[in-house]
Image 1 (tube, rainbow, N blue to C red):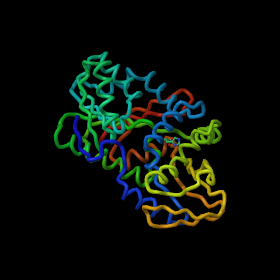
Image 2 (cartoon, rainbow, N blue to C red):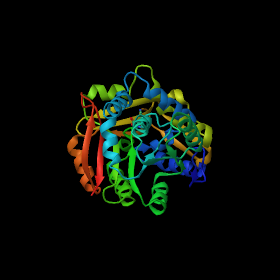
Image 3 (cartoon, protein in one colour):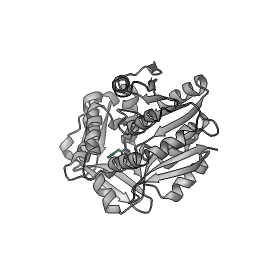
Image 4 (cartoon, protein in one colour):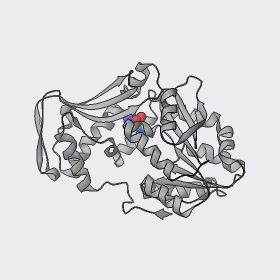
Length: 326
Ligand code: AVI
């Protein structure tokens, strides 16, 4: 296992967290960065979200990868050795669908899962050793770009990058272009990227996925305030905020907010400040972009890729798009 980051437990640096919180809550309208959702409790809640009946994304992607695994793997393999780099691998449940197929076909590759969590990478390496002992695994603990840079400098062979789960959708539009351009800059012509993207669809279906009946997504969103309380000495009264998601079908953006149910002041020790909330004032906490195929094409050509193949479910809810570096 290669460790490129000092932080091995997924924790965020407290000072950076405090600075980001102070900056976001001083703005009008208020914002908090969605990357802070994922502490241990937030990651557990996200696991629960993925199992919800309303959250179709994970099930659809499983289906797309399962039904198309042979063809996907055929596109990856083309007779020469390659590194399969999995950005944000986590427990790699979806990637294992492809790994089993690559293993079955005795493809010449090694698997490079990348994740900020050292624990997750240790567990994944162990489980792969048991399940697929013939697959060579080189886990990298660190952020995406240092990992890609390290691969670029140390591993000259062909590369296939995985960025599954519609994680790209959580970036702002300009950030997603920047992100993909940077990924592309660490790859060579002919290298590939398989990216999961949630597609535009009936707005009510999208809204329900982020406003489930059991309230798990609400708990996930509110956990951000709980985290500020426990890690930064915040004094949020969680019961005085509500989860409020809204989908804009023109922009194809699902936005989540936390709304203050009353006028209140909240002191956060590590920022040294008190923040004022008007009654019904909101904090914008997350964007989840939903794509049209035209947008996918624009994104691809703006970032140095061309679309090789689009794999999607029969209801066209979710796509795994295979891009090639031009
Ligand atoms: C991680 N990401 C792709 C999820 C999404 O659908 O935007 C995070 C999430 N937020 C609320 N539910 C799920």
